[in-house]
Image (cartoon, rainbow, N blue to C red; front, side):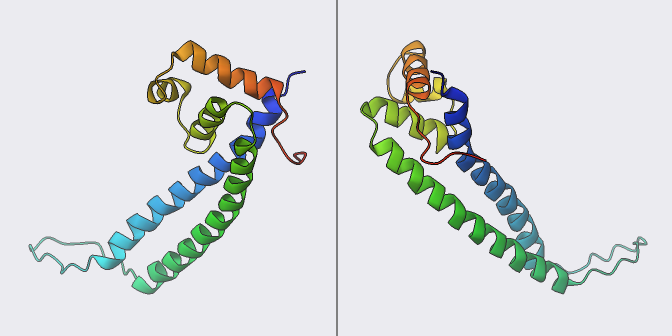
Length: 142
């Protein structure tokens, strides 16, 4: 029985949260650097366009981004702990390490193989074996 796609979809949910949080954090950092860098205008005698930018809008957006990031982190943490629970009960600890590095840290199989001092082929074999032979999800996906 092939469970690979179902398991990959189940574990991949966490990385979607991580990617979304990273995007929001990047936007938050860009916006906060713009808000908190108060600069005086350069008076070089050249004409400038007349645009008025209100800092209130940026501060409100910063608060909204912070709130969204907190909500996503809370949701992703529950998924992460659910995945840890599954990984902690796998019979082969090496397979558990491989899945953790793959789905919680987003690393490639080649990078994982280097980190655990195992050949690429052996790492891939263990990865595909656990993903195909076990039903790792606790609940059916929508």
